Amino acid sequence: MALPWALVLLMLLPSAVMHAQGSEGPNAWQFLLERSDSAKNSGRYEEALTLLDSAMVRSHVAHDQHAVGEVLVRQAFLRQMLGQYDQALMLLYRALTIREATDDQRGLAEVENNIGSIHQNQKNYDKAREYYQRSLAIYDRLGMRREVGKCYNNFGALYEDMGRPAEAQTYHRHSLAIWEALRDTGWIGVSDMHLGTCQQLLGHLDSARYYLMASKEALGTRNGSYHLGLVNVLLGNNERMAGRPRSALRYCGEALRIAEGMNILPFEQRACECLYQAYDDLGEKGSALEMYKRDIQLRDSLFGQANVKEMTRIELAHAYAQKQLTDSLDRARTRLEEELRHQAALSREREGRNIAVFSGIGILALAFGLWRRLVYVRRSRARIQYERERSDQLLLNILPAAVAQELKDHGRAEARDFPRVTILFTDLKDFTAISERMTAQDLVAEIHACFQAFDTVMERYGIEKIKTIGDAYMAAGGLPDPERGTPLDVVHAALDMQALMRARKAGRDAQGLPAFEMRVGIHTGPVVAGIVGSKKFQYDVWGDTVNTASRMESAGDTGLVNISAATHALVKDAPDLVFTERGMVKVKGKGALGMYFVGRVTDGVRTA
Image (cartoon, rainbow, N blue to C red; front, side, top):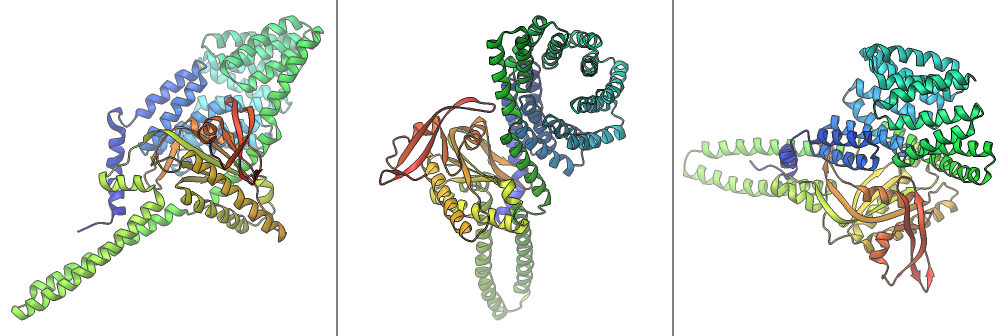
């Protein structure tokens, strides 16, 4: 009995996974996690993030949701250490969804604890306390003493930030009792550091210095560079408050060197603030001004309005995603089930008629039966062909044509490296503010109308739509067929998208309706692409090129298309385009990157 290709796909997905894992085994992601942890502990954070990207690919290929959750949490932790709070929060919400779905209570407590930490860093103290309480309740119920100790540390740090050191001390003494019982020197050092902070906030400078020196000694035994940097900042502030600014310079200078070496922006900001105050106390105004400028720049990067807006947008996107009960792939699965039922009905009908044919007696009855069977076979073939075409169309709605064909031909579709792919990211301006003026139905309808128009543009230029994330739209040119969706095609598509958004805004403004404007960013470089998931499978891409394209979007301007220097080098000779060089623009996590605004030329006038 012939089966539709969609059914063959579902049956063969496990074997595709086994092949993709190859000789590296089903737990190759665990080896990459261990290497990443080693790099992180040595302060090589960019290397650790690269290894985690590889672990994420292996986890998806293995269809291991537990592994995906583990990688997401580690990625979020590193992003948080580097001060990239918006990215960390987005990763943690993805991990939260996975662990809720698998009822992983321990993992759920870990994620909620980390989300609370991000809210604390952003001074959202009420939300931080809410997440910490949920995490502590789970760990306490599971009897996980070590994790309970960490939660007490977090509660203490929260009350420190809230300016309530007496309450903070209570939590830190609870945690210290746990670490001493467990004989964990490293965590004893962390609790001593916090107790020193509390004493300093209470004005007991000598007691504070005693605890901080004990902490530095304990942390030095476990190569704890991360916490050592923070202890040095605290010691520097202690020395400055005690009237010893020269000694403060030594401690805070050491903290700044550690922070710069590890590229940890929050510690770098605190060290610069300490150095500014120490230089000012010494009357060295030039050095004080230099440190003050660095302090302000880092504060803007970590706590500025743009960062707050992005955090709010991520919160809204998470809340909206939680309410969505179905998506297009759910509907696709329903259609597959319907097709299976059709095939079963056809099979029963065919078997019944076969019996009727062979049960006839006599030449005339046999001839009549054979004639009926011929008619039936023709109709069945037509029906099967129709079902096969439906299944093929369904696959093409889910996967790129080349990938779908590979699955049909070989029963597998392996992740592949692509040396040159052009990634496009969009983001709607003031999404949070505008969405608050619209009903949920109107908001969904408006986003659907915009994205539907974008889909048409992608099809016109041969560009592969990858996914939508809340109000963001992501597409890629040059995969899975490197000959389609060139960098120039992607730039033209982006300009068409901006033209559509301008026209739609003009129409809605005339009706007095809220309307969106948009930023677009583009970057070209190498990626890894393949199928992820075992049920709601999708085609996705990974790599630093994706992160850089996202940075091009966030560093762009409303209504314009911002491209990287790499993409500019590939499209600069197009006669119908004009470019505005922006020079080297500093972006979070990437340093300074070359960028260009691009537009079309119409009678010599820039139109974008």
